[in-house]
Image 1 (cartoon, rainbow, N blue to C red):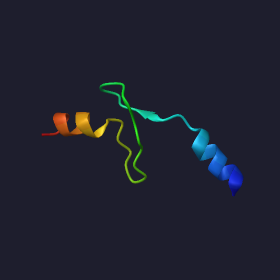
Image 2: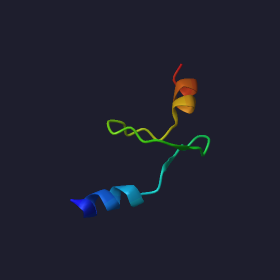
Image 3: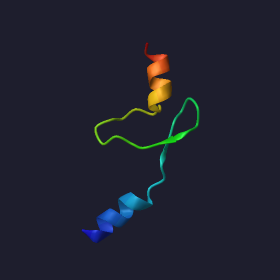
Length: 43
């Protein structure tokens, strides 16, 4: 179990494909845009 946690903690942070900012990944989301870019692009 601890090996699983170590694996997930060692993954790089997700980066927005629009602006390049790192953002916290939502467990239920497969988006590749940060909230700011997503809301701007999907008005």
